Image 1: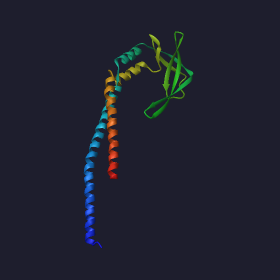
Image 2: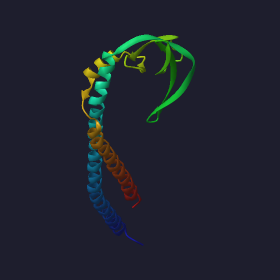
Image 3: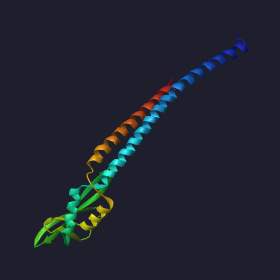
Image 4: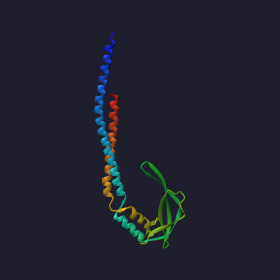
Length: 198
């Protein structure tokens, strides 16, 4: 029969052997996790930087569009627009969020000629008549919003210049950041699960 002293020594030996194996595995596991976390952090920084750059592009308006809005403001005249009976339902999707909108058409008359202007809104009961701003030199070019107010808003909130380069730089940064962060996150989870199984 095994003596208590021998049994105690064997249990102690097994305990320290298992502990040594565990610590060895932990020492190998921690640096891997550290590398994964660093790469995930770099990916998140790329996503943030790309988003900020793309957002800067959204705050810009091309010189051509600005000139067109300025021209429309200078040459705008107004008349009344009258609601047509029918409305078209439009579903706008931003990411996973869906929003129901309605497109209404208004008839307006200039020099006895009938024209149509469209207005998209989330209002289910639009007014029967609205003010229509049309371009004196191009009567069919019309809007239900004041082009001069729109121009003022653009001058306050937008910068004149091309937004293309902001998108060319920002969007790839977001995609690379997503791939880097998500790929390393999955690898970290897989490594952690394998480590537990061992």
